[in-house]
Amino acid sequence: MTRAPQKRRLETRAKLLSTATAIVQDQGYSGLRVEDVVARAGVAKGTLFAHFKDKDGLLAVLIGEEVTRLLDGMETAGVPSDVAELTARLAPHLDYVAQDRVIFDLLLRYSGTTADEPDEVVTASFTRQVTLLTGWLQDMQAAGEVRRNQPPALLAEGIQAFLNHVLGVWFCMEHENEARPAQALEPYLQAWLQPPG
Amino acid sequence: MTRAPQKRRLETRAKLLSTATAIVQDQGYSGLRVEDVVARAGVAKGTLFAHFKDKDGLLAVLIGEEVTRLLDGMETAGVPSDVAELTARLAPHLDYVAQDRVIFDLLLRYSGTTADEPDEVVTASFTRQVTLLTGWLQDMQAAGEVRRNQPPALLAEGIQAFLNHVLGVWFCMEHENEARPAQALEPYLQAWLQPPG
DNA sequence: GAAAAAAAATGACCGCGGTCAATTGTAAAA
DNA sequence: TTTTACAATTGACCGCGGTCATTTTTTTTC
View: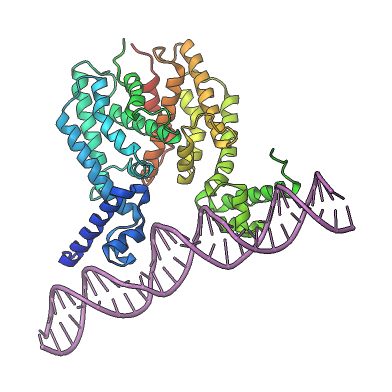
């Protein structure tokens, strides 16, 4: 029987999270140091690891929250009417991930997780993204905006593959040729989703 | 004017590489420790970093050699006659990368590099892979085995995206449901390459 | 209340990648 | 040969993530 966590523990966790959020705010994700977090939170280093499996575990919570927020935005925007609009819906997510390689790496590490450990925030948001995309694609198939000869779930996974591809390339160049990453995404989506004929 | 490297340097480099290869042989890529390499090679730690930018730089050479070997195999196998055969051609590469997450991570980090720094072995092999695939696809388009409404270069990049997608998922599951990763790849390639109609 | 048990927090310690001023080796210039 | 300039190597040192036996705090039991 697992006992309920006591108040002190919840406070400590909250303090760690808010401190980490603050640090990310002005150092960015890649500037986050465990030792800074615990110092500014006023706890010992070991404490952090009693609350999060490792540094990635902490990051996963922060990033998971953000991704959840982005998904909320996508969801309220509603079903896109064509591929261009679909790309636009995905653009904020791309911009967010493109901002820091750490985000990309972390998401990729969790990106295949089926809902085995849904307690993890990141895992949950992945499931949600696939579900959302699958739903959209189904509607778009019905509207004739998307090829119908493949199941929507497969098309959704393909979209994730292209998202990661575009981001992978993004992090390899020295963004001198700026432009938002979503711009690079569209041709792939067109080719992937366009109805035959 | 950069001077030619002296003999001693070349020997040291060779010793480092052979030692590292040996260690990978029986500990795997993820078991490779810089301190082990230098100890067994009989040099100081700093020496290694005078030869390779960082641990990844060393790994890139080892992995690059292996990938080059795999590409040689692909090349001699010749143009596949359909998507199933194409999948079969890619299977050895998938098996190799699937063996250790370290390989996957490293390749992904270099995966978008256009031939800016072709000195890097890995970068070179990437360029080569894209070239090879593009050539194949062109021929397969001509043979009517592959859709013709997209440029072969785009189709080739898409294949890379699916390769990485399949591998990403692969590393997230506890391969209880074994099977080679190439098996997971085929449906995507069919959907991506199949001619309309 | 005190004693026993469980939860939470602590910080010295470790592993490992990476740095750099100092040292040694090598080869061209005087 | 001696001097001079540069190439190559060295190893003590650092940063940072992560561990774990020990101590402190809270909760339960009597």
